[in-house]
Amino acid sequence: MNYHITLLPGDGIGPEIMAVAVNVLKVVGSQFNFNLEFQEAPIGGVAIDTTGEPLPVETLEMCRNSNAVLLAAIGGDKWDNLPRHQRPETGLLALRAGLGLFANLRPAQILPQLVDASTLKREIVDGVDIMVVRELTGGVYFGTPKGVFEMETGEKRGVNTMAYTESEIDRIGRVGFETAQKRGGKLCSVDKANVLEVSQLWRDRMTLLSSEYPDVELSHLYVDNAAMQLVRWPKQFDTIVTGNLFGDILSDAAAILTGSIGMLPSASLGASGLGVFEPVHGSAPDIAGKDQANPLAQVLSVGMMLRYGLNEVAAADAVEEAALQVLDLGYRTGDIMSEGMKLVGCKEMGEVLLKVLSSQM
Ligand code: NAD
Ligand code: IPM
Ligand code: MN
Image (cartoon, rainbow, N blue to C red):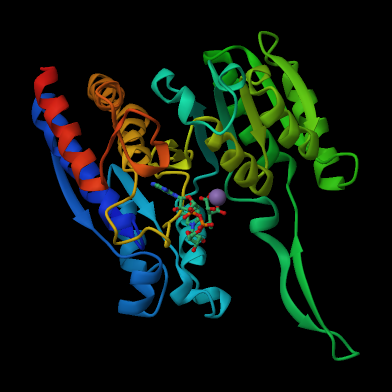
C-alpha cells in the first residue's frame, strides 16, 4: 500500500511533536510494509505569516487529495489581535468544515502507569475509560448570525448563534450510539435542555434515535452537572455525545483525568472517509521551543490515524504498545512527571519511542 499523508505541524510546540510523530510513522511503515509519502503544508499562524491566510486554498486542496491528515496544533499570542477571519483558529475551523469532519472522537483513558500523575485521587481515576464524541462542524462555532454589531445607541453587541438542525443532531447521534455499541453500551448525551431550545431539540432527537439502538443505554445530563460528574466520579461514563462547545470544554476536563492533556489524541471524521488526526491540546506557547512538550498525544493521534484513517490496525497496535512501553520504562515529560521517574524532553521521548518500536519486532 502507498499512502499520501498531509502533515500540518502548525505553531508553538506543533513542529516539535510532529517531528516525533513522523519518525514513528516512518518506522512502522517499514515494519508493516506500507509506503508513506509525506507532504507538509502551512496552517494557522505560520500560514498567516507566509500567505496572509490561516488556511490557504493549497493546504485544503492538499488535504483533500491525501489519504489522511496529521495535524499538530495552531495558535499563539502573536496572532491573537488579528481580525477574526485571519486568526489561526479560524483556519482550523475552516479545515474541519471544508473536509466535512462533523465527528470528533476524543478518548480519555487512564493508563495504569499514569494513575499517580493525575491531580485526582487514585481511586477516582484508576480504570477511567471514556470516549467523548464531539460534534465538530455545527453549533455555536458555526451558527449565524455571528459578529460584533453596532446598535442604534452606538454600543457594540457581540453575537454568536447556537443552532443545530435535526439532521446534524441525528448524524452525530448515530456516531455516538454506534461508538457506545462497540464499547460499554452506555451513551450519555450532554446538553443544556433546561435552558436552551437548541438543546431541547438535541435531547428529543437523541431520545427518538435511541429506539433504533435497543442495545445502548441512553442517559441525559445537563452540561453543568456533567462537568461536575466528570471530576466527581468519572467511571460512571462510557461514551459521551455532545455539541461542539460543550464537547470542547468537557474533553479538556476529561483530559486531566488521564494525567495530562499532553496524552490525549483525537480523530476528526466525516462521511467521506478522509480524517484529520490531532491531539486535543493546543500549541502550548508557554513551553514552545523549550523541548518540554509531551509528544505522546501526537503519537497516539498517529495510532488513531493508522486505525481509523488507514485501517492499518497492526501498526496502530504497535504504536500504542510502544507508547505504553516508554512509560513502563519510566520515561516522563514534565507534564506527567512523578517521583522516581526519568524526566526527558520531547526529543528524547521520541528517541526512546523509536528504540522501543525497533525492538518490538
Ligand atoms: P494548550 O492546550 O495549548 O495549553 C494548555 C496547557 O497545557 C499549557 O500549560 C500547556 O503547556 C499544556 N500543554 C498542552 N499540550 C502539552 C503537551 N503536549 N505537553 C506538555 N504540556 C502541554 O491551551 P491554551 O494555552 O489555552 O491555548 C494555546 C493556543 O493553542 C491558543 O492559541 C489556542 O487557540 C490554541 N489551541 C489550538 C488547538 C488545536 O490546534 N487543535 C487546541 C487548543 C488550543
Ligand atoms: C480544540 C481547540 C479548537 C476548538 C480551537 C483552537 C479552534 O480548542 O480542538 O479543542 O475550539 O475546537
Ligand atoms: Mn479545545
